[in-house]
Image (cartoon, rainbow, N blue to C red; front, top):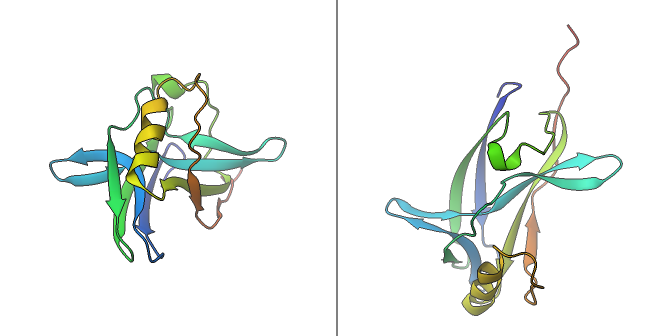
Length: 142
């Protein structure tokens, strides 16, 4: 990690007795969960999304069986890409990951199909999995 790039390795495990369904993209190399939100604690605003910035919704529903797991390698570089430039991000303070999931494939598909518009009310609310909070200390003063 540096002050303009952070790499994260995240393991997502279904610890329930039922399959869960997540948004993602099926690549030839295998499925990738998307979006996995990185949130930063802002004292006056609470938890705010840092990444990803999405201009397109994910195209697939990924089934994660009971006790199944997926590993994710995420890289975040500053400054953020063009669609994210309005977000102020510093790699310091408290962070957490948030992942949305569903009890069945139909709920996940309805949600994904409404994602691009965000102007239409989404009637299917996802369940949330939230990581433990982790902290990146401020850079030493020079």
